Amino acid sequence: AAGVIQSPRHLIKEKRETATLKCYPIPRHDTVYWYQQGPGQDPQFLISFYEKMQSDKGSIPDRFSAQQFSDYHSELNMSSLELGDSALYFCASSEDRGRLSEWGTGELFFGEGSRLTVL
Amino acid sequence: AQKVTQAQTEISVVEKEDVTLDCVYETRDTTYYLFWYKQPPSGELVFLIRRNSFDEQNEISGRYSWNFQKSTSSFNFTITASQVVDSAVYFCALKRSGYALNFGKGTSLLVTP
Image (cartoon, rainbow over all chains, first blue to last red; front, side, top):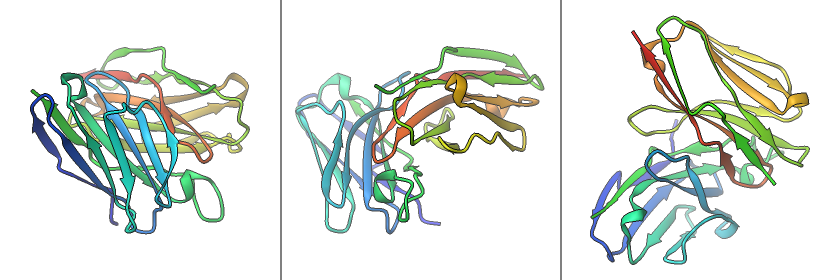
C-alpha cells in the first residue's frame, strides 16, 4: 500500500539559507500534519492542513510557512535557517482530520522523515 | 489541557526479560485516541497500536500487549521476552478528535544480550 512520501530525505543547508520540504500524503487522505523532532526530543507539532486550509497550529516559528496544494501534497518552507532548526521533520496524513467518523478512522500515518542539518 | 507523561526516561533490560513502559495521559475530552509508536535508531516512526477512548479492551499482539485503564488514565505497554531488536525509543501519544497528535517525551529502551 502507498505510504506518506517525504522529500528530500536528507538536506544540508548553511545558516540564513532557505529550505523546502515536501510531503505527499496517502491517496485520498485530506489532512496533513508537520512535526519537528530535535535530537533526543519528542516530535513537536508544527502545523496541519485539512482540505487545503490550515486546520491547527502548533509551535511553528514565524520564519516557517506551509501550505497544502490542490493535489493535497504539502510543502514546509523554512527561511533564515538557524542551527537550532537542525532536526528530523515528519509529515503525517489522515482522513478527515484524524476523526473517528464515517469518513475517517482516526489513524495518522507518518512518512520516514526529512533530516535537515544546518551548518 | 492535554498531556502525556512517560515517567521512565530510560530502561535497560537483559534479553528475554519482560518490560513495561508506562504512559499516563490527561485530557478533558470524552473522545480521544491513544497511540504507541516505536522509533528505532534509523529514525522512522513505526506505528504499534491505536486505542479509542470508548474501547478499553486490552490487546495482545505477539510479544506486545497493551493495558488501557481509563480509571487511572493509563495506557501501558508490555514487551514479553524482550529481544535486542526491541531496542528503540517508544512514544506514547494522545490525540483529540480533529486535532494533531500530542507525544510524550518517550522512553528509551535498551535490550542487551
